[in-house]
Image (cartoon, rainbow, N blue to C red; front, side, top):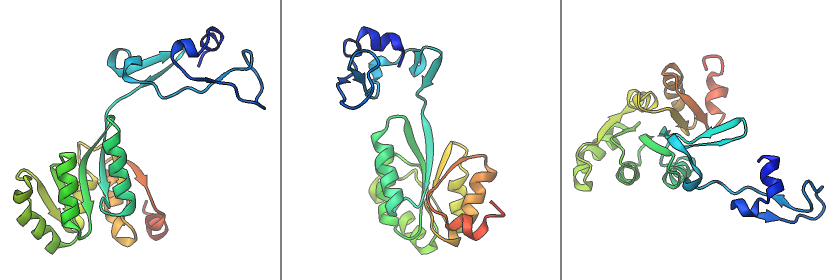
Length: 193
């Protein structure tokens, strides 16, 4: 924050101000720890200006590969709690029930299961869950389709082992930003990646 805001009192600007013993004083003995700004702080186009810097809040679209695992489930919790993130595709191995529940909660229209029989079960049961418009892909090709969805900006890659290499390459070839959650793909095919 600018020195002007500190001088004029961060508390009057709506930011918490704390006395922190042991830290050097800048403006008196008060230090402000800026809380995340709220929607009321945002200007036009969801942007906020401070001095010469400008931060913009824009919607990021994400495909989650490995959505039923620990990392994927936590990522979905984060996506659900952040209005600036939107999931557009999910991929998993065999857990078709969880993928369908996640798709329903997030409003997803495309999912993939690496196991063909699991994909058949998902297709058979999607209408009962109110997911008539859901497209279900299967196998490595299906994972690659979710990994390279045109509407996805970022791909969270949480598929362990060798099975995740082709989808990772598809994401990179599609020009996606990749959030890699494990080293297996890099260890297995580092030169390709």
